[in-house]
Image (cartoon, rainbow, N blue to C red):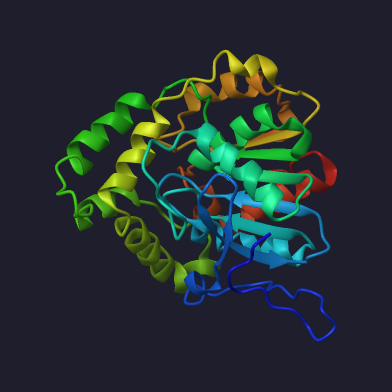
Amino acid sequence: MTCLVGCAETASGKKELPLNISQDEWAESKQFVELSTGIKAAYVEMGDPDGPVIILQHGMTDNSRSWSFAAPYFAQAGYHVYLPDLRGMGSSDAPDGYYTPITYATDMEAFFDAMNIDKAILVGHSLGSYTVQCFSVMFPERCNKIVLVSSVPIKQYQNSVLISAYQHYIEPIEEDGHPTDDFMDKWYATSLHEEEFADVFDVFLENMKKEAQALSKKAWKNIFLGMVSVNMTDLYSQIDHSIPVLVLHGDADTMALTEYQDELLDIFDVDENSYVNYPGIGHNIQFEMPHKCASDILAWLDTGSLPDV
């Protein structure tokens, strides 16, 4: 591993990691690692360096901050938490070419190698869940358990929505320009459902908008068009059903639609103890209700079942 910044150690030589990181400190807490896939990837690291490894993966045009409210619960529970920025997003490199979920899964395997991770629990939200789906098919031997948050089967079900958004909001931008404030407000239209985060939620959301808006037009194009260029229908036959899978969904989600959940559960052989459809919750479960989201995942990791919703 080539750790370029941020690798703190105690006097005894043991790495010391934070259990919590404020919104003001989040961006500065990122470290960087060169991957064998040719990019410099940014990531945040938290928790117990000797604990079981869990990777929290963000969604489309987001970055590791997306999980910043939920991550401390995993860190405080004794997990070794990694939160990478996907290629083209956050502070990771944004090279030419479309970024598909298979590209991201290949980067993830390179991240495992760079960080000397043998196996891990993988938790992915939205596009991050597609990365986790692909990773579990391509590298099943490296998956302990997987959690799919706000997900659907990778069968191009979102193509028309994404292509329409790209053509309407991104394509007209000048080559050196960025999405408008109006679009960013629409892109991150979401509601907080847990009052304990009310005093910092606006700061969090404003940072999310600004960090996504700062991405180049080329990065937005590569992210959007890469997402619609993959269909996993045939590859789903290669799933290793010995890997436990949890699926979290909100019934007010307008992106990962409820109508596709039964198919997703069937593909991954998910039983009723490992699926929840939260009433009134939208697409961003991990920051609409971070405490509940993390608590349910932790309970499932511990017992194999979800607590009562």
